[in-house]
Length: 69
Ligand code: SF4
Ligand code: SF4
View 1: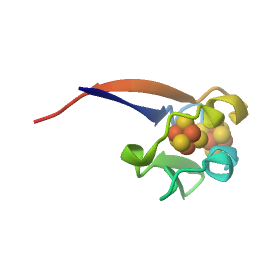
View 2: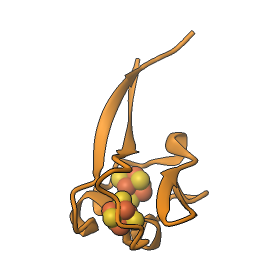
View 3: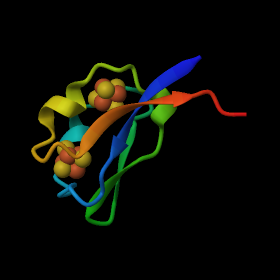
């Protein structure tokens, strides 16, 4: 089984917060941390791709994860 989840390139992230604002997952996948956003609840992602569309710097990508353990 592989699951897709978002990943943030912190070098590209401007901390605008748009991804966190648009994410409809519960709990929110993103959380602000200082002047960047970080992925805190990747397993909650519904793969709606909204965050990809709103990110002005394309810092968010969806990656596949092979099941660990
Ligand atoms: S793809 Fe949708 S559910 Fe997943 S992190 Fe982005 S906005 Fe949230
Ligand atoms: S939308 Fe993009 S630039 Fe804005 S906080 Fe999210 S990852 Fe960072």
